[in-house]
Length: 327
Length: 262
Image (cartoon, rainbow over all chains, first blue to last red; front, side, top):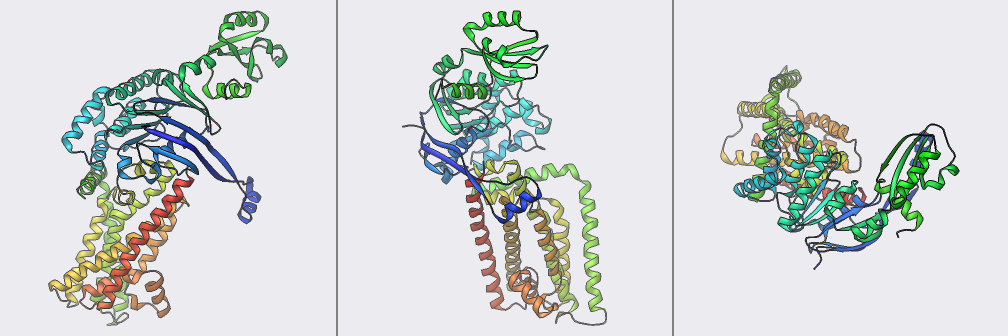
């Protein structure tokens, strides 16, 4: 039986159309005009117990809204959701004991007190007795390489240490389903790697089901054999990461700083133009043609600086959708 | 139930641990309590200066009302204000999500999360005034009166909590709600003096529309051993009703939050 099953899930928000300024405010107060905006539209998927699935999509694609519907914080406008055999939106205690939600930009630990206090509080809330709680804290702290940090006020911890403590607090009740929304947001490369390694280990040791969103492609490649790709609220891809990479990998982003401003027409032959702002150009070039094209453009164009990197996920997805490569 | 008690112990233990940092506050709070009480006593003594009675209440009997008001003000500082004004920031910062995902009643969490020891001095001062004044007014000190008085005080605390919670819960829609709780606190100062001291129109307003009479005057009557059965029943029924309304309203607010938030 699937751990998470989602069928035809939709969420529509009613948004007020208000013109800026005082006149706009007054007009809005007299006659409200609203539009319905679909944040998530007709999304369906199933996730089996123990799977680690990456949730990809740009800003505002509907990832967080979907995660919140799966954890029961938002009521769906339409469709059916079942997580661990429960309907999330009822938020019944047996369901809440089986899930956890970690949000990279929000924290549940108390700012002025050491994480250990918040952990003990969570133990009391979940009805875990003191000895068992201490045992679990010890086990998870060892996996996260947390030691004395648990006894220092949260405000004195680094961002990486704080995130690790947040994870500990979120996993103390041993949830079977983990919803992780940008768990590595803002962390440095080492801390990101540490968190990734922990999540992989946790998944192996406890067989937990994990649904993870991230802006960092590296998080997804390291952890998730399967990915869901969502764009403008619609599910565009559900399958193996390898297959998606085969479509995404051909492209790399070449960022150029030119000494003079050139028209788009003289740049097009080197690759797809992603952005052209003054003397800064960003081109998408197929990986198999990369060295040849970079050689050509260095010879042909007045280049002051050049950088090659993986394009940001959201732009890549947007471009690919426009080109009809996926979807 | 045991889980709730254990959670409550952790809540308050943590709150007191972070308050220890600010010991100087205690001194300031003590000065404020004494000054506040002294000014109320002064105003009240002006009414009674030449042997007048206020709305049929003698000087010591009116002092009992003042004591009850002081007790409730202490309760506000100890529990209501520190907890309920936080709902706004939970909504603003999105941390309400964490509360809603815990397998524990969210109204319990939001109402009991923290405790401020700085309300204890006004509560003790209130009890002292009540004790002294009740004795001077010749109130009976038999167990029945004490039990009834205790129950009436509990009812008034429940009514006050429910009013506060209703206002604080509406911050789900209107984020700037803090001013409204200040208005409530100001209105409650009307409860410093016996309700029958006010003109009939205002008396009706303070009894029926705003249950301020039930907050101070009715428990004071009970302390003085003059409460009638009908007032006791009315008080208990009102407290229960207010509490149920606050729970219903919170569920209603959450429905709106869960269907609108992003």
